[in-house]
Length: 111
Image (tube, rainbow, N blue to C red; front, top):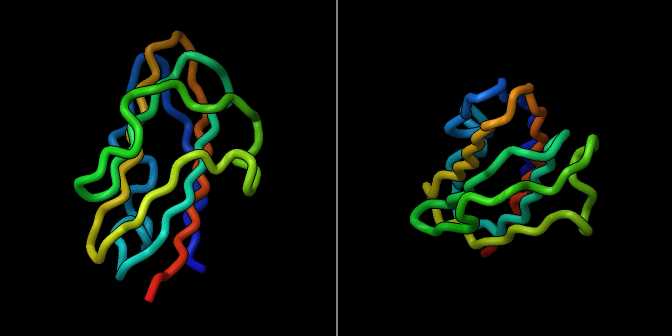
């Protein structure tokens, strides 16, 4: 099962257009079921999640935790990704301090 696990610091009053940019699995290689969790080290940030043309989550605050998302309890976002769908997790941090975001994405191939 392919997985993406990233930890990214987003600076004060800045944004990151894709927390999984550059991953080998950023673009789906075939039909996959996506199970995704995102945590932030502090309150105040916002995330937006897209999978291909699907909007999985409009800009919303992520779950706050200093750990990676716990499977299955914090894997809140699910979708079926088609071949060449791009996973995009954008983050905006309007606060006065840096916030660490942790992403765990599990991709299960579907025949």
